[in-house]
Length: 258
Length: 234
Image (cartoon, each protein chain N blue to C red):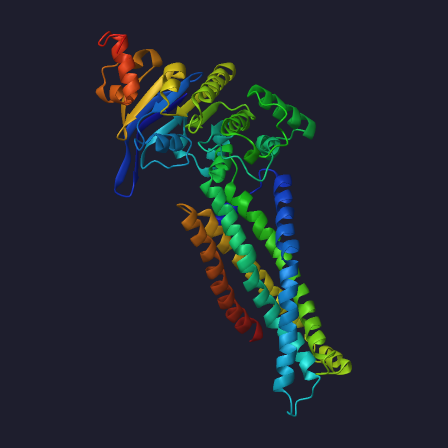
């Protein structure tokens, strides 16, 4: 479990996070949602220490992450996997080398063991036979899956995903969402996803943290999200006219032939 | 950055491989340009001194002596490293800066890699080994360039040039050349890596970082040249 206590972060005069206290539960897909510029990415990067908070505490189970020195932070990060928005695959390495990189860096496995582990991960994300390809030869969806494979290769306890669906078509987005969800359950890891994809919210949102203007506006799950009376959340979810029509139709406000 | 980069490697093998790759990039990748520059440095020095000493009481064989010491003490280490700052330094800044912008550095950090150490230490280590070798090669090629420009063109006889090369040789000058090469190698790699590692913004900033890497490295090299010369010739 990851817990934040009154996290604040300012860049110069601009306060991006204004005291966020939230819980990200183990074995669940925890979603951070909010409008662009609401502070989602800053919060996610604060959770993994890529951004240092101005004040507040991040807890990894019983460990105060914000008080750790660089060496201790690296030790915690050995239990962390992350999928970046742009996948962040190393261009000069093949897909196989990308996934093997954490194994090369942190394990004493033999070459054969590493290859086996790489193939298991590639199979897990439904990518086989692409070992020797370079990231530039892979589609956006494939790159995301390779990113996930690299993130899980060391069997992390925590998985972070920064906008895993950005730039993907709806069908591929669903595949990525389902993949993340199934890996979370299968490995019982704490997954934190930063997204504004409404399909992800409704399908895999076990725990949803809605950020608005740097503050925690609402927290709940996918079953509670539609019935929430929080105005900001409702206007965020039903921002698209299509969804508004769909909601009104489901509530019987407009007739079906409209 | 330098303090963080001096740390125990997570995996020695990975650092070793990266250092070898850098040695190849810096060393083999720069041999042609260094050879080309050095041959002309030596050639121009020989022709220039032949012209200046013409009709003077100074013996002709002094040209060989001057070209040799000029290459060893000053031109080979300084000019080579100024050129390497442009070639290798800008490349390092752009490579690391590009990794920063594409979140590769963040990705490594999240994995638990000490990025300052993994990305910078192999580059500095490789440069500290390879650049002095390149400078030594440059000095030899420079002296050869002087020979090619002066002997076949009858500016100087073979006997005079080789006599000059053998005269007044001070091994300490070679030591001075290596000191300069090592200091310049450290300066150009650390400055370039710093510029790349802390780049912010987009492609314009990356271009600026690359330019700054060359400009600041060149200034540092010239400043260090003056200081080392004063210190080592006192």
